[in-house]
Image 1: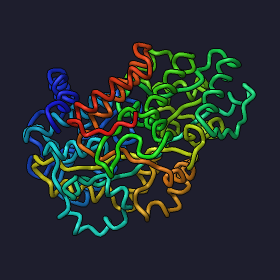
Image 2 (image 1 turned 90 degrees about the vertical axis):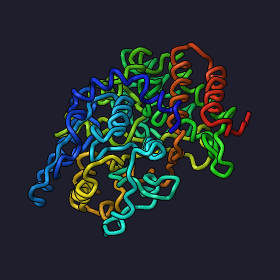
Image 3 (image 1 turned 90 degrees about the horizontal axis):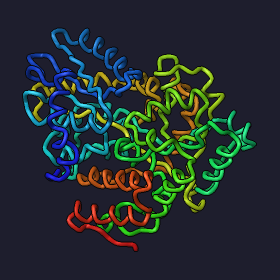
Length: 456
């Protein structure tokens, strides 16, 4: 990752984050002292969701019992998503602060590979029979441009539209809603606004504070419904600028906020708005349509951040349509996270042994059930417990056939930031879609040293 990317993700935050590392337990002492490994992972700011904490605690007990003398220290990084990325990057810079295992979003893994922060794990994988159970697309998400593998994925995800069937019925909308175009989505939101005052018609994540949620759950769910390879052209190895699809996608965002079909702007731009959606607005019947991820159900199960026994009866799910209903008619994005070993880990062997413990078949099923994740192992996907684990798992697993993946390139984080800035400018009314798109084009040209193709 070049200096400009690092400036975006870390340098401007260095002072504040350095203080935060001590608070989260990640900066004191050497990583992996003796037979102890440190495992760093993300904990959301609101402190309500403890799915990962509880799962890692379970595996830690198993691992320590089966490996006498080995110890696992769990290091939760409680932060917004963007700050989490920056904090783990700062930690991985130094042997003194580097954890032995780190939870890496697939969108950032190639940037961290390029920065030399991660250890290739191919030699470990060759000796691990379970690696053959992982699907190829999941394996590819953890590969560097050098062809080496740098992480073990623990699940994937898809995205679609969640909607409140009770609110739809009150507004006279169909409870088996299947919109065929963007216009039909917007028209439903307009009907909610007219018929149900006090209800937020629609949520689409937007702006810099939302980070990758804005880029992926929000913008790219629109952009990838506008045409082929709308963000990056792999055959030309160039980023797309000047496209009508990009401007139209910003136009959708503009319509949502200009017509007051979405949340109040100040709420939409809050870094913790995702938690508000999941634990307050949807359970309280205050939000009619939410463009969001397959994992949402884990907020509402008995062990979730906001137990809500009625959620499966109240909420429906449907595909996000392409712009005008053009083939294939449906759009979704997939991502996921991997467990990676920092290059400066003191105990990479023990760290990988812990990964294998997390990824026994039984533990992999357990995690997918707890997290409402989409399985990346063939044996997990075929397991009856997984198949019955969460209402809607079959719907979201079925979307995989339509899915798109973000360009797995080191410069992608810069492009993502430029998308967030364009969305925010439109959301706040500071720029028209055309002006925001033009500013984005210039940012991408600069970030990629001119490796762009114009479709304008």
